[in-house]
Length: 368
Image (cartoon, rainbow, N blue to C red; front, side, top):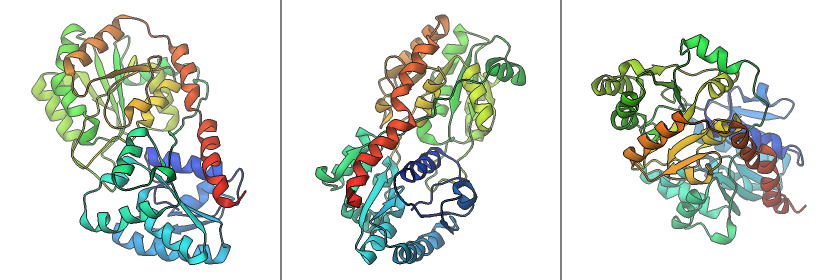
């Protein structure tokens, strides 16, 4: 059960789609999810619930979860995030089933008093809690989740071969030519740190490499429940103030094929995430997606990002160390990164690994 499934957009939605399909490989699965999910999950049975507004989704999802559980009598009820933990707990209790939740950082730090009074206890009450990173697991334990019930399973990524001609298509489409291209992919929120990167790092990078381009793919997270500043208007204003407006290109959201081309066409993925109050980068799926395309990532070691980057797939820097960020970016642009080694290292994050680890944790809960 989850609110986070396509057609909603985002990393959590990709992950939950994959988790449903992985579970369906060894168990009979029924889904309670957002409107529009049924067509994407066919032939799996789906009970759809309108994902917005949240005040309507919560009671409707609870009713649907309990009704579905009473109809199918499951052995295990799974929450795709902490948001649906209370509904999953109620549905499991209604039929004597076990309960599990896959949790992300935001599931555990949301400050709202009602959420902390009802949702956090529901997460603690799960028979199994699976965290998306070591950092998320530490937050879960700080919130009272018992270590014996807690596991860590990092998200996965697709390992498809790059599309022929992707680099040329991407650069031709946007007129980048042979310019060094830094790529940012993701929601334009404050914790992603792009505004600070543009202010504190991009001017020095552009000073050394005047033709550099920062290509930004993403939008203001229209489907997210937790939105914290840092949108496109603020980013462009910051670029203008810093004198690098000509170096920043906002490309908006794009298709999966276009994103593949962007990974192929860029020279480096920058992920300058920040520690923001009441917000956290639970893992950093974009870093392993970039690695799967042979593109290295330079990131600040914040939240769960440390689980997503290895020496073969990029560099982890101390939080908000912009001088070091500048130096590493320029050094990378001067050298030649081994894309094949980067891509090979990403195999450790294949979805098949994710599916197997989730199965090892959840299958015993079904008495199998």
